Image (cartoon, rainbow, N blue to C red; front, side, top):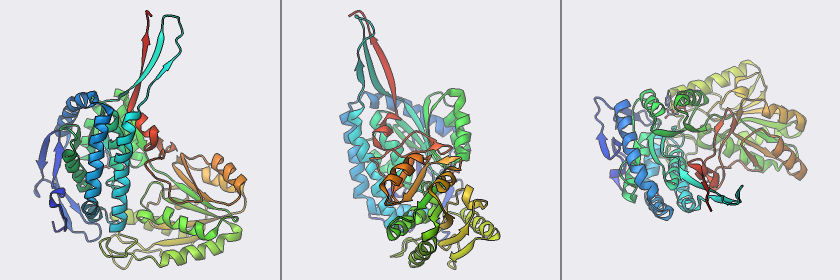
Length: 485
Ligand code: ADP
């Protein structure tokens, strides 16, 4: 392990099960590689059912004591965790870039973004208000109080190795829940570093476990456990549906942040330069590997050619390379499977008549690098129209009317993020209301923030993360009927 860290103890080849750190060894552990170089960064333990059950049992014990503490007290511990994350922002970013590949500046941005959820929920902890409703009988009063759901299991993906954890752990701990986490196999070191800082911040032993190893075995133990009251998952719709079914016998609460197929619409009354900038962010952030990335870019006929030209020129100027090198904007894709999917989508589009304006092939750097790509002449029969590409491909569809594009945008089983650019205020209202999505970005390509409710409708998921609603997802409402008054 050659990562140059100010605090090398943050890079630990171990998992945290209850209060027990389990070290990895190269013989039995799972290797974690740097996607930019293919080098092995280190190993994490290959754990399964017994360790998951041990973590769940510890989480149960720790949760009772944690929930009994005041919300202010819990908030202060979270605030310390936030401070430690920001003090160690550079080191956390280096670990993240090493295992995930995104450029260092973008990784540092993710750490600040991830930490902001801990900060936000440290503050929100004290605002889990209940209410008192006028009684239905003279001698009765109706009280509603909010209480923590209990032990929460979390499964997170590799595209945001830090923030996808904190936006679950922040509200869970603020509410008084405990959490057993299985991070993505590709990016466990960011999760482990978070657990080290959580311990330092005063998160009690057992409240937060990070179990690495077999996704199937850990997922099965989590979903079958009657102690686990909620499962929160961010990942693909396929795995989400599987976990949903696995949770049915024990009727768990579910938070699911699943796939998207985001439309990005540019009307001909838009500020075109702003729309190009927005498209670069919405499409190419994290190399197209976010669930809110623009997947289908619809451009009105009158501005189509100009938009395509400007977008291609802008993207062509952005350098691809190892995320540790300065000025890099596009890192590698996460793995060979990701490159294969992107290549298939581009080949399918070209076979059906699309034109490559930029990129369109594996990058000369080799490995999992792929050229940022812009396609024109894209139509609804191509795979890019219906499937999430999860890579740096901007397919441009041409449309004529507002009604036509709204219908096309909504013609998907997904409903996570959507975006459009227009300067007509009546159209802004009409289209915002007509898009069947959990989130709409109007004249912006960047919508995620701790203050806002992030989440999808249709097959994009259940529940919301961030905002005051994010806390509610970790609370139950208890009704107390006070009689005999
Ligand atoms: P992606 O395609 O983004 O990797 P996945 O849905 O495959 O998305 O993975 C998201 C998370 O779900 C990862 O932590 C992965 O290990 C985990 N996962 C994958 N398959 C299963 C499963 N059968 N049971 C539990 N967790 C799983």
